[in-house]
Image (cartoon, rainbow, N blue to C red; front, side):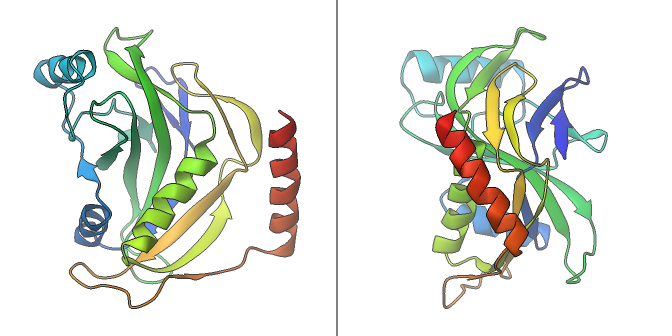
Length: 219
C-alpha cells in the first residue's frame, strides 16, 4: 500500500479509495473545486516555476508521476491553497478494479498536501515537499467531496498500517494511522440529498486509531 518513484524508491502511502466510474470521479472533484493536473513537460515545468516566483495562478500545475502496481497514476487532481502552485492539496489515483464488491470500479489513491517547491534529488525536475500529516489531507479530501454532496457512503480499510517515521521518494517525512478512507460516489450529474453515511470502524481499529493519535501527539 505504498507507491514508488520511477527509480523504485518507496513513495507516498495509499490513503484514499473511491468507488465509481471515471466520469463519477471527474465530476466529484469538479464539484468539490479541484482541478485536473497537467502532464509533466518542459513547458509545464517552466510554467510552475513562473507561478511560484511571480505568485501567479496555475490551477492545473503538474504533479510528478508515481507508480502503483507497476504503472503511473491514471488521474491526478489538485486544489490550490493560495495564488501560486507552491501550496496545494493533491491526489493521484489508480484504477485497481473494473468491478468491485459493489459492482462499481474501484480506485486507490495517495493524497497529501504540498507545502513548498524544491528540485528532485533524483531527476533535477521541479517537485514539491509534502506536509507530514497525510491523514489530515486524506480526511480533508473525503470530507470535501462529501460537502459537495458527491458521496453516498464512507468506510475504512487497512492500508500501510500505523507509521510514525515514514519517508517518501524525496525523503520527506510523513506519519499516518495507516487507514484508507473509501468513498462511494454518486453518479455524475447527481447530488446526494444528505451527508454520507459513515460506516463505523471495528472496535479494535478505533482503539488503534486512539493510540496512534496519542503517539503522534507526543511526536
